[in-house]
Image (cartoon, rainbow, N blue to C red; front, side, top):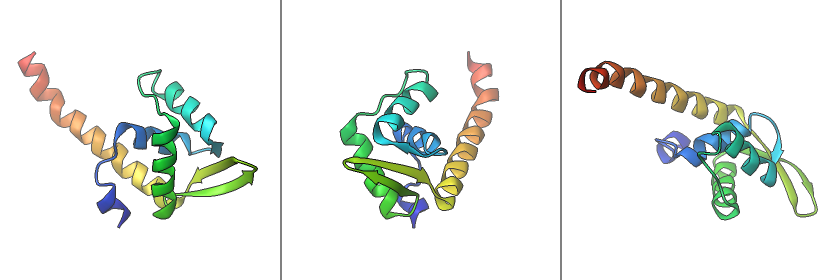
Length: 105
């Protein structure tokens, strides 16, 4: 069901899941997304927590710790599979476009 709902991950989704390959809290996730994308993708708190809620509901991530208002998360095996599928999909898209785009540019 998760693959249907998350057929193609948006950039924020993709980078959030990459960030969660190691346990992180919300602020650390936002910083990691910016770092991994070299500042190209920024995720605000509203977007982040909405996506974390959806991911957690689908078993893509799990909460690992709660300290007051600070919550930490990590990607699950199911989430890793989803992330890998998306990674492979993106590689295929780039490969499909390489020959065609080089010819046209």
